[in-house]
Image 1 (cartoon, rainbow, N blue to C red):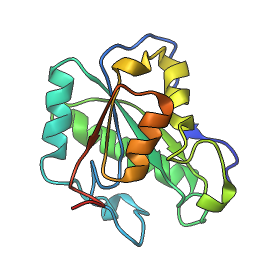
Image 2 (cartoon, one colour):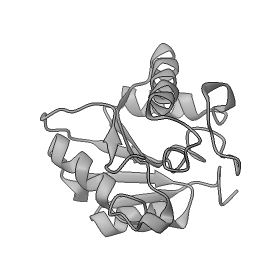
Image 3 (cartoon, rainbow, N blue to C red):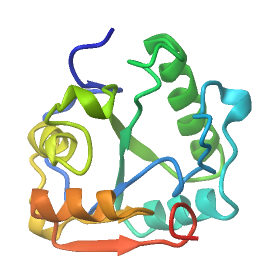
Length: 166
């Protein structure tokens, strides 16, 4: 069982123009059965194009996502890394760039600081990239995504109707 937050990469560079994206329901179709493999991962129509547009406009895209599939023992850490690497590669092949991915492996009952709506994942991204959160944008499909951004002090939140609110 994972005890701490895992992420794809680490950098001490300062990022301007940051957009945080939730994963399930914003980038890919969500599933009540969870996304447990790359074959189950299905991009939401036009989500890749949206990431490409953000990239072309100079935004740094960082994914902030709860992934309790880890502590539910439904997917290994390596399995989730494969899903995320495949997602990043597909986006890159279409002209977009996901700068980094921060995820929480915990179940709600773990009461950790990183599971949205708590702001721990955004704070980790802020620390890694010296992000000025008042200038950051969070795009999510649920109230917990918006609450997470507000708890962290993000300047702008966008609730999309592709996932939980569709």
